Length: 268
Image (tube, rainbow, N blue to C red):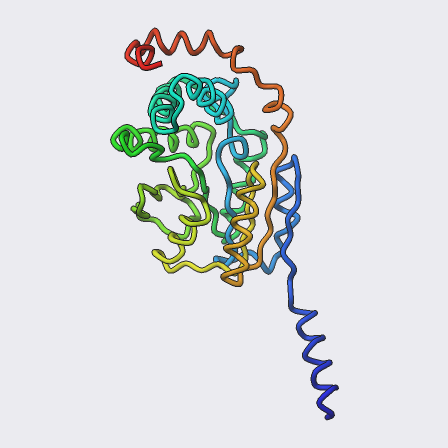
């Protein structure tokens, strides 16, 4: 066979087996199903869910991640530097978590997660929650348990089909517990790679859903570097609610929280 014929056959083989990466935007969490075939139903496929504004959200805006962002901006005007602002805002956010009620962002989300877990696919959550200030490590470890209980309250348990069963210290204050990677002060891509290296789990395909395009893009870079097929879904369901959010509308809930925790009002 002539060399050019051999080259043509090789190129055709590449075209048949190569699966291009995909990044889309969708308001429907069930669109994950569109990117899973029967051939994907095994441990080498990993589906990753963001938590805030993707998997769940408070029943009203108080205690949400966009509420925290707005609260941070409010106190930043008073304290003028990140460390002082973060120390105050994180303590208020942690306290709020103990009194809010969570709901799935879509009613179908708990069943979707269970269905994926039942197929043999690995499923985890990846969140910026966790230890969000080095001065609040004890409080942060306690609130991680609160986050896990929040998930259980809406019938979600990421431990059922996770790649690792043991709790892990991922370094730089990041933690893995009950199928959830809590990156805390770290970026998601850095800690996810560390999780892969520490556990020895190396998926061949990742489907990641997150409401922030930045996170979709950085995980894409991880997958390109490691030769992992990638589907990123920028989840847009709550976009309008976030655009219309006004911190002033949660002032009554904040004052109720201060009444329960006067020490926080002194900080604020």
